[in-house]
Image (cartoon, rainbow, N blue to C red):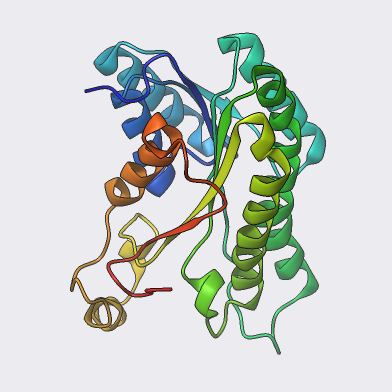
Length: 252
């Protein structure tokens, strides 16, 4: 059963990891998808992914280079989305970076880079996306937060602050746009296996997994399935919420 047939989705940071899983799952459920990548080094793999998904699922998938930390880039991206697909039903603010360091060693540049991409980028894109959604009087905005945004984490003050900010932003946008049938929710993933976690020391990974009640790391599909739910009509009465996808690491 395709839950997203007839819908168009925009996903930031969709070339690898959780973003790639989200793009794949949205296409599998029938959505037309535009996703972003930021570096020239990701161009070939992103185009290959778009072509492969289009062929496999019979829907249109497009890869676009865009740096959403820049306000004007976000505006251009949404305009391109609407010109291409005619509408914007689902916005997944997934793009994010880390610049981990203890606060005493953290530079202003490391702080600004993370806040500009993880928080300001979501502001810019959501502000641009609300225009077509307001016209349609419908839409689902999904912001990728983190369990770290709820619990904090030593060495990640910048990242945790950006992800906590997203939760407050999500609640506010849900209140602002709800009367126009536009929903806004957040997802807070826990320890998810991606290309980034492959470089972690095995003992570190084991320590994380031992602390998870389900006793396993999450997979990209675990997060992507939550995105499908929040983007589909199954969640028509769900807004302003943060859904933990963490195997029980957090229960509040």
